[in-house]
Image (cartoon, rainbow over the protein chains, first blue to last red):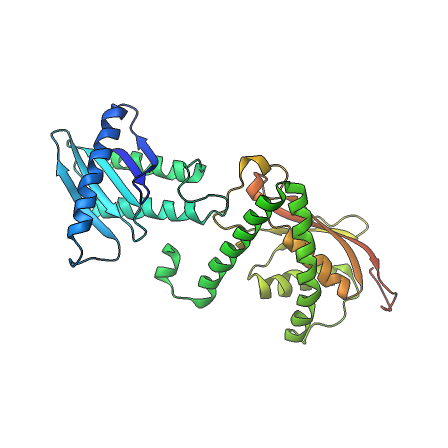
Length: 139
Length: 181
């Protein structure tokens, strides 16, 4: 199940981080922070690689308790999903989850009163990310 | 945009551009004037200027439209042809007053307000789509009809529906043989 979904800007500032309340949020924040390095490394090395339109980076690095997946959009917005090792996400599911989070982000950005880069307070975005996190617990 | 990927319909793509443009304009107006009431007035004035020009375009493209003799006819043409032509929606006409001089237009899906969420400080005062009121007022004034057009509800504000109230005031210049019923 997804225990954390994080959205980061191109300067690696956190736009929005949602953690499962049962987990230690500090540890999850730390994991998100460390995954930034891995994402940057992948981005710098994958220049001539098979870049599909949206860079789904797959599993970033192994950890004893969690699996960490990354995704980067063309505008360098990074989405990181951490999920616990007990219920691993299949590749197709992970891609779908990322594209749904990306879709929610697009709707957020289309709001003329939201300035990109500022902290997210939009209710529709918060509730759709929350439901995506919950949905994976049922799947 | 996620939607334009699936259906490359030119009309659909330009409607998103239109919504974004209008949204940026309202956001800029809010930044410039800071007072939502003032922004409402500005939107109404802008709409009025659009309406006085739009009516000629509308009448040129719909030769089947003849002079209206009743307010009901005006409402029908406004919704079924006017709104359909420019915004692609057909609002519902409701709440006729007893003296038949006032009615409401209920818009189910407002293309201007896609993806919009009002900031908390103008949640209760800003009428986001107030430009529509101005357009209706301006257009009808050019056909010698003086109306008062105001918003009474907006889904962006948390009301049940987006509703515009149109109240007939008078015929201008007495040039119609019969005004309203």
